[in-house]
Image (cartoon, rainbow, N blue to C red; front, side, top):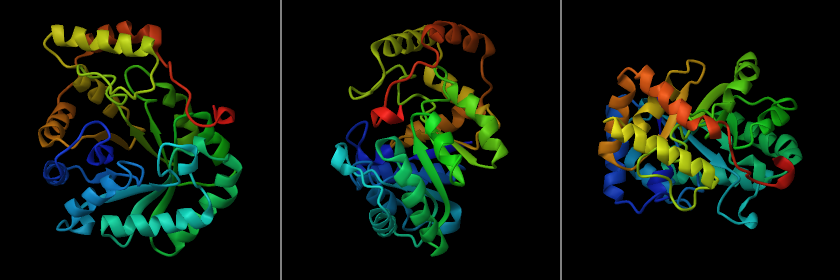
Length: 297
């Protein structure tokens, strides 16, 4: 299943035309996508604002909406996981989105905070938000996989969102699946194209992947193009084939792109091409990068 990621609506990857972004949301919903994920951090509130304008005339029951708390910028001072701030953040997001509740409220990039605070303060605050009817479920997000266990061994959550850890070049999320399934936790896989590493155009300049990963992904993209295929399509097909993962979130503000993504996952995967691409990527398989506080990596 595909979900729509809201980061592109905040011009994270490129400057966008707002009308085009709104049209992308409408086309996604009209063509069967019903899960939308966003955050105050994306575009420093712009993504939520654009999405809110896109959702104005769409019945609330037609979509499942997720947003986040805790991260509001790029610098250390822009992270605040305190109970007071995350509680206010939910109300601010609801106002921008033009809704009275979200389906998922998530702790954003928790590796940039204190895990002790997130367990004892942030998540309890979000449970109170849930009890007030402003969110249906409480979740957590981060890059370092070990942090999911570190939190869930101490406090219950309903959902996790992992990114760049279930895609052609990195399938390390699979090691966590039995633990998550045993606890009945919903699993959202973001960036199945590894934040555009697995595309012919390549990733943005700010992408944190090491050069070895960038080079091998670029090689795989050229290989697919030489065979008249597309690495991004293969990456999406690969990700959605994993039945334990409820949703794979792709971010775009391009109406043609989201339609192509939808068509791509409806086509069968080419097993021969998959094997050849996996061989190209094997030297960098599961190679990741640090994120957040040193003690959280």
